[in-house]
Length: 105
Image 1 (cartoon, rainbow, N blue to C red):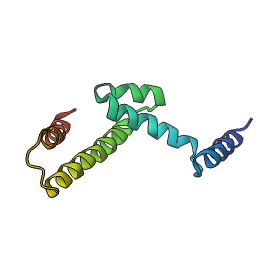
Image 2: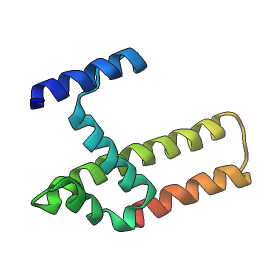
Image 3: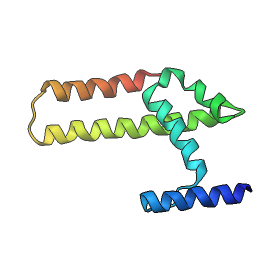
C-alpha cells in the first residue's frame, strides 16, 4: 500500500465517521498537543515519539496548546465575572490555573 493510499483511506474513514476528512499528519499534531496539555513536564517525549530533529518543532505545538488552554481559562473566568460570580471557589480556581500556566516551563 502506498503512502497516498494510506492517506486516502484514513481521510475516507474520518469523513465517514466524523463527517470531516482528517489527514494523518493531524493525528501527529493532536498527539503533541495532548502531551502539551496533559503532561507538560514531559513534552520532550513528543519530540522523540514524532521524530522531530529539533525540540523547537515540538515547542511550537506546546506553545500553541498552552495558549489555547490559557484563552479558555481566561474566557471562563471573565464569563463568571460577567455573570456576577464574586470570587467564588470556581473563579478563584480558574484564576489560579491561569497564573500557574504562565509559570510552567
